[in-house]
Length: 498
Image 1: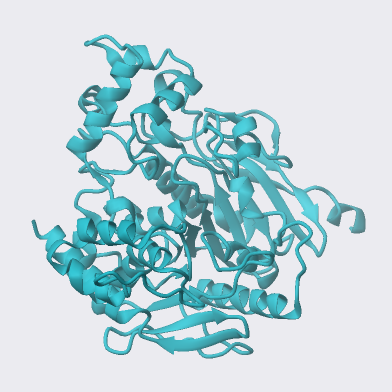
Image 2: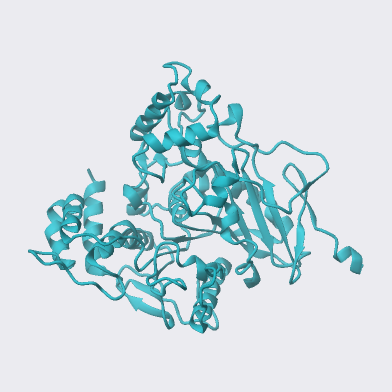
């Protein structure tokens, strides 16, 4: 019996049997489990399909290549090892064999929907798994391979819609989890979708999609909202980009897609970089995956009725720039509300504004408010106003080695993955423990609170409580940048009503 307990775990899933590996501490891990047929050849730019059955036992002990992407520097490892055959997910299990149902966290990676992979989500670190979660990460199609809109694709679609194949992959993987995760000890009725940056953006979008209804019970969005970069394109706007791509690649006027399916994935991605003026977040309102403008879904109180955590970092983006440049951006974005906002940032008249010790220079404050912080406040305000349990956070403590809490810096605390050679303090370890406890509690019950952590106030439209992750640990606060965000929300409402 002792020898049998040490045998590698084998599980039957959709398509056949897979063999994973045991891990220290009595758990198990299964890597690169196929959840869909490879989207290659004629399946490029089509909805995902179930994997073809295989014979024997498939080895699931090593990561396969990431989805096709170009190098942005930070994703060099994924860019150096990628393939169109990439629709795989990874599963880390706290106990093997399973003895009871465990909550499931389904992680969607960031990278502007043009880069990244499920491997990058620190599944081998097992920080959240050690809190009793079954942890799943997923690959999904990226860039123009994952989000191309073109009239010919729309005509061949049974739903008369094209684009959003990456979102379809995420939904298809969630269906796979619903059908298979119980075999790994996971509770298919207790799935939390979580993600950062583009992953958070996609989760926010899935919360407006009828196709995602019933596939998850709660959501966590780290630094990504439906409002980032202006939100999804219209179908017509996305089709214009698709036609530019076809022209760039010298596709014929008829049977353009047939021709584009013969080109290499790298050619498609390089051309996409040339013709796409958004540089990422390729999603569009296609009428099928996303039937309506997502911000209008939230505003009308019709987002999926799930408990939700959303938040951002104190200085997500922003580089030093002259006060005049920030003023011009505010005027371009806010129109008649601009002068009020300019005064709030201390930039009225000839003033150059002051650098805030937490939020940085006025330009950094503005860019973080406009692209991340205030869209999160707006989205959670509308979700909470519909009666859904919601919780907001802001990371104030920098990642070790950084001077400010910047984009993606919170991931070190969520996963316990510290930068190489960084000096890790007791305060870092404390905050990581608190954050992981909150995330695990929320995945378990829909409420981040529990023994051993400070009380996290529920976000209410009146009080707007939130949890600040500070240099001294978790600290409850209220009204995050309320005056700044009220202008943003009013402007967003006015823009969306046009």
